[in-house]
Length: 464
Image 1 (cartoon, rainbow, N blue to C red):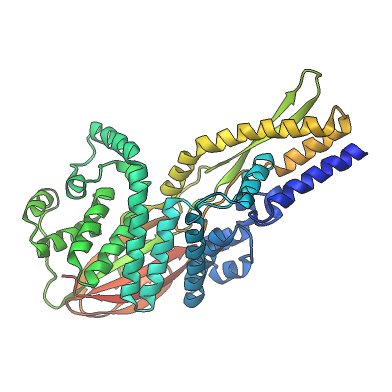
Image 2: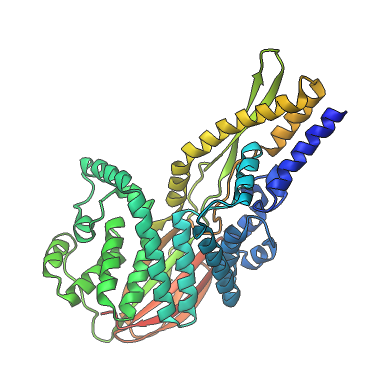
């Protein structure tokens, strides 16, 4: 009996020492995707208010919890609440990045996580998630007509992109070589921006949505040099996106970039000015929600020299295969508005998991050793003790499926030159009326999930 009490005490101690960084007891016996499923499904169906009500007070820590709160509130048009949540997430990220040394609490959490599961560690957001944090902060500022605040967030987001690029320079170069060997593209973007033309690999690391929006905001603030830098970076990532091509050509023309224009015009043709009396409409359209990771489990019996064994569960996160959700075409005044892929967020999430997988597998192997040591020290040959340990191990071995699950699955862009005046955008069954000003650009932001959509527009001024 004492041995069993000892086993229970050790188990409880494991939970307690990880309690501070860990968030909630639910992480001992369930993984994040399972706990977050009600919020995820509500967002996927476009039930934004329901998703907002399902948001927990505390589940995955100040960073990830506030990512989702900020995003869901933004979709639910609760803009002050959204901005507050993103600011809290930003503050938590800054605190995490400013840590000079690992604290005693962090060390205890790491040890506890090794003996229990990785959900008990502090969540470290992926680079692509940090980029989206600043992108949505920027959109919050833009919604408030604060162009300067939005531009500042774009700068911060671009710093995240640059760090990601530098960390993966060798991988991107290798991907570029592979792309070139298959005859992919003419390296136009690479010539302009010193980015390797890495095809899908580059798209999985660099966010063209962020770069294109950044270019638009710089252009709106009349900082043409910064706008051109971001447009050409976006062109390196998505060389066939028509809206990126249009803005790159337009700004290169305004800046008199003769050498670059010579290269660009050979592939894309020349920049086309707005017809007299027309304005430009640019639509940024988010679709669906990014995939959530699922759990893959393998139970392995392990026996010692005395033929006493235990069941060790290996639980790994993975992205299951699923069909891409299809949406109806957006219509402008009853005419279908063609669109181009701007960012594939699913690819970014899957690439992040692929990069992390080797360390995840190593930690799983170390966990088997750690748990087997605890079992031997605790049960000491007792069959009932072994049984209790097996139950504990099975229940607590959970994969780390934490990620920002309310992000869109992909982002598409459209543009159209149209006569100034009132116009109507049709998004599924919803209609949205807006005004187009002569010689100016109207940006329309749309996020579509299920049969619902959130949308608004801003006048960006004279983007010629």
